[in-house]
Length: 196
Image 1 (cartoon, one colour):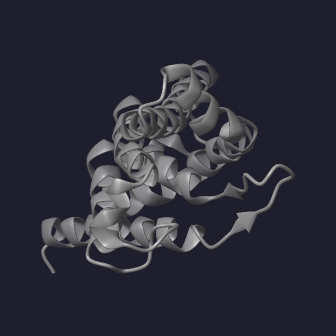
Image 2 (cartoon, one colour):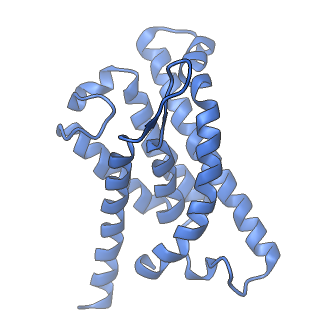
């Protein structure tokens, strides 16, 4: 098989794989006191961007969102396009924005990013800092889009929307942010072997 065709195929296989991971991760729910559970979905959304880069992370999210819009039960609530008439629609739009932004910050993965590679320590630390910024930006955009959409739908003040749509998720998202960074560090060199 022509190497360029194989590369393109591999890239879209990884996009489909991340779309499937995002969909399946919605079934893993950790209940918390107060009624706001921790779900893993947004961690895999951010990982799509930080592992695959902006374009392919965005494609993974388009596959996921497209599947939900045609009625495949990948969203937290059923309903196809009608989900955008609920506050969840803002978080779904935020998924796309978060993956794109995270991927823009770190770019396409490279095989030289191996954890035990020969690159200078300073470069590794700078990349880890970029990865932290990318992950934070991804999570922040998801919450911000969800809160702003909630504000629009429910005619709420910005403060009320942030209190309802961001504050309850901060602790859970901080835990997922901490988990997503080492995961991305380990997954990027693996993905790079197949998509770069």
